[in-house]
Length: 152
Image 1 (cartoon, rainbow, N blue to C red):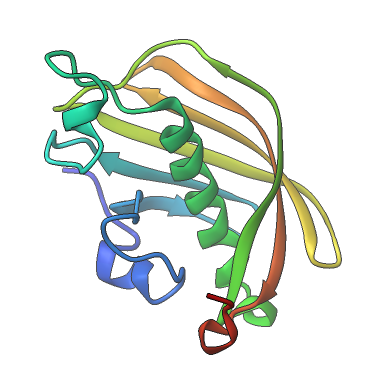
Image 2 (tube, rainbow, N blue to C red):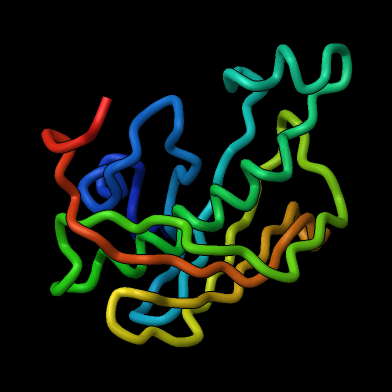
């Protein structure tokens, strides 16, 4: 049995995402620069009825979002970023190699490569077993989380 460092309840204390858009189920390993996390793909996710009927495939952009959420767990775990939000600032060199299907467990590996002020970069890769599914360079911005100030 794998040891779990953070369960979903603990993850929800770090990142502001909520169901149905939380794409990380558990963290297996983490330090101040890297993380290994997992997302169980059950087939019950909201996107499968339309992507694709009769052949459910997890959308590649949501695999990248899962990687970004894993990276946000690292960044927002740091004392100076607690209670803040991590936002996508860019993605580069993203490639999709293999698909992820219901019944698969997506392994999310992110290594923060550099950060200057609120802007950071990471190398992100997703696997099912040993099969590389998708990955690339992610860029993020750390900001204040102020949901009461959101424009409608």
